[in-house]
Image 1 (cartoon, rainbow, N blue to C red):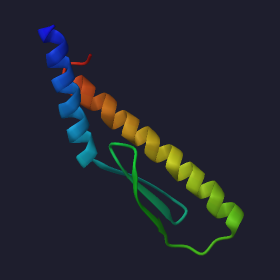
Image 2: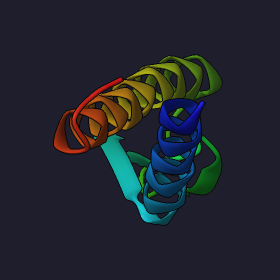
Image 3: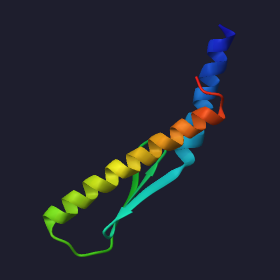
Image 4: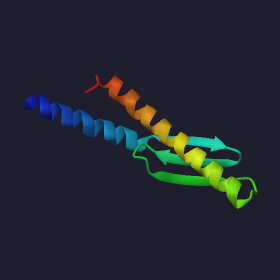
Amino acid sequence: MFDNIKQMNKIREMQKDLSKERLESTEDGVTVIMNGKMEVEEIKITEDMDKEKLERVLKSCFNSCLKNVQMAAAKKMQEMGGF
């Protein structure tokens, strides 16, 4: 039972740490910034582009940023001894 409580505390600590992380992905003048809870914090578009290109670039940036968040979470889990 105490092991479960310790695990839950580790998970809460990891979630708190991840919520402070800011991860970003940039491609073709578009930047997507997410926090470690996979919430979008910012989208920056610095180039003028047509709708189709913007849709393609946004999709790519979101997917890349999500992978960055997942890698950060995996790294935190390793640092904390895994689960």
